[in-house]
Length: 199
Image (cartoon, rainbow, N blue to C red):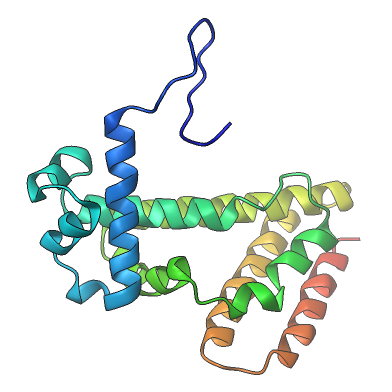
């Protein structure tokens, strides 16, 4: 089943609502434009043209510019965390967080994220979306740590998960700035060492 199909018990599989479809198209158009041109060079007229809708449709289907930024950040963060299974082991989580191939990509989502994050920090709604995504990441790391080190206290687990998440996020930034990938190995070992302190 594609993500465009909707299944409800007792009802036939159908198309998504026009609202959902238009919102996805508008948000995707915005992400593409921000990735290509930079946030400050993207107007609502540009977004409407790229999405193939009238400008008034932006407000109807998504809202104002701040709502559009929040929706784009939500889409990017959901995608970034989609492949992090809640049942991964500590080794799998750390390997994934410090995987050099994830840091080399500069796809549309990565380029848009770089543009949108500073703006998100100034917007209460977008800020909440970013924090929620980091909370989710820390929770996934915590779950893996809790399974591996059941004797550790909740506080120890929370502190260690937070430290590993911070290391991974800052490493992502440093790698995008061009620091040698060889340094990731040492950071990955440090993340394992932090986890092993819980033993």
